[in-house]
Length: 247
Image (cartoon, rainbow, N blue to C red; front, side):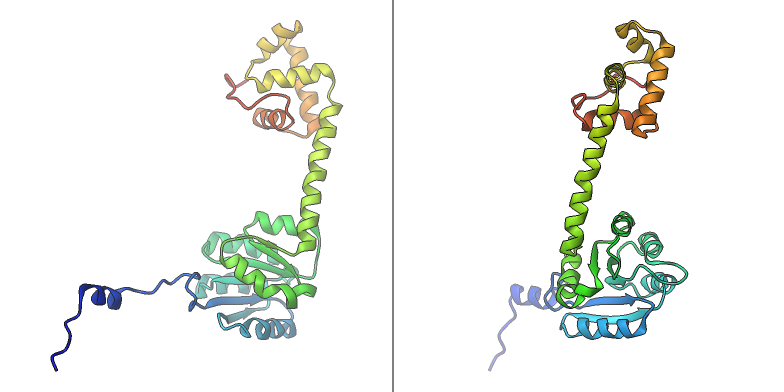
């Protein structure tokens, strides 16, 4: 029997390479676990490797080892504790972001401190899971982070949102501490006016404007004109617009 000639579609199907990213159902998520407690590392390894698409390729007992493994092994994900000897998890997140930027970091910590949460997110981590919730949440968190999304333990997410609104309320309180004249000066700065223009519009001296400006910065804990403009826009003192020129 004469073999059937391969069609161009058959040839394309044979030469087409399968996708190599996580969206491929057959792809395996390669994980490094960083924690200074060996028993916990082994427990987490058993939990993760019960999943058919997760493989633990390395274990680190401190942040420095985690950074080295991230750089050398190029895992998809580093599961990072925060409190470790030498280089802690927060600094390790920062170093991995510089040395191995394609490696994702998911924090697994027993510490529900809000400051640590904000710090690791600022340094590139994509998620935060509490160890006491690991059995219920960790696998889902790994898959969520691998899709490029942020995962936060619900209790930490709630605390994070509450903290955000609390900070916004504090900013509003500080704004109310400004005197009417200070608010006028701040509005002038945000509108792009020079000190002289503000002084002329308010019928005061430049020195008085400079004094008000210094008082505003001290009250609001701001450090330059850009910060003042951003603050005035955020609090609704002025509408979003391009300032005319630098003061």
